[in-house]
Length: 576
Ligand code: ATP
Ligand code: MG
Ligand code: MG
Image (cartoon, rainbow, N blue to C red):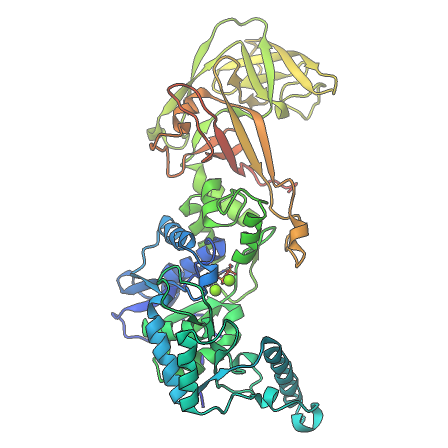
């Protein structure tokens, strides 16, 4: 009988079994085959914090290992290794220890030898096609057994080479020699594998002699070129968990069926058994959370890179203007359970609004400028704008009001409309922070019917305007590029044909935007002085924006280009 941890499908228990005062250890084990994404942020939040909360472990008794689960050298790289560490640190997590599965290769190899000596592993020379055929046969036999039938009678006869399999009964001595030959590089890639001799009658296909080692003539990005055989995930994960003395090994639900093989191997090697728990995988609507798919978006130049602001990667979200607080708040809000987890982007956006409101510096900007000319005002006037209205300690900045200025196209209509309080003929409008009221005298339109200029006069009548519109002086302003982002995919749950479901308009570049010049110094590309952790702005009445990495602006010479990324609109965009 193979002992397994029997709180099988239970939620993480609310009391842990260790005596209080002792260390409780979890691990976060990403594979360096891509950049971390928001799903990993959920896993980190669970492994560094939430799991301990659920277990009632006090902060001083918590330990989380950060483990590079690096057993597929052909998919892994130094770039990914570095990015994982960078993103984890940026999110604010500090592991008790950083480990690499690859640093355990010697130990894993000796475990494999031990397993062979126990008669529980064998070198298998079945071809890929034969292994596939064997898998099908086993599946059919298991289905017959499940229905109470007799596979010997009901299943068509197959060669004993396929079932039970030609190499299952090779002697221990022969297997030891063959495995050593594998290690020495005597066989070509794909020629044979080391398989665990598990239980081919099990209803769980993961017990059908899963692969422990395969041949790969690829150097490893972390440990170099010492190996031409590499252990599988199934072989590695449980042994390293055990070796590291992990108390709670938390993974996502698709690994639930691998629990049995996890404990089988630890039982076979007589090793310490961590407790395995599963939680649901995070899925976010209108995007994909799989490194394999994200890599395709990068390789096909669908996006600007792993850190494209549309990407659900940590680096993409960072470039988009999300702070670690936005991301961790979101992860706390969604929690960790076994329930299906498809989350609307709105949840993430709402976390951003809450976190950015009190840290983003206010600025006035217009994305689609329409000129306003005042006919009875020739002065200019200095106006004071609070940097953060809810926090006077953050000071204020000055903007200069002039007789010609720009407003946003969304704030103008060619015809008066009783439901519209912006600029339209005869309308009374206030100008934010300028303490100026104007009456709209006329709106000029272009050939396409779009307003091109608004003519107004300053008025001192006592009536209160129904709106206060944001503006940018026509004399004092900074031109900038604004990139607005929509969903990466046109459908909430991208299907197998996900490549056809990519939203071609997920990025809209606005090159006409103007921002108040006081924002200039904060946009300086060479300045390391940041207003807040990510240099985000709230463009009043529009939304949150962040200075993008593509910015080359130099505030002293006034040369170069300013690029802003839209982070999130001020209000939930219902149309989306
Ligand atoms: P991907 O398919 O994106 O490569 P993965 O599960 O193979 O995902 P790993 O790098 O092996 O990625 O994952 C490290 C840890 O993060 C694992 O414990 C995994 O379960 C967890 N994880 C990965 N994606 C998600 C997700 N979408 N939601 C929650 N946890 C996740
Ligand atoms: Mg993985
Ligand atoms: Mg993966």
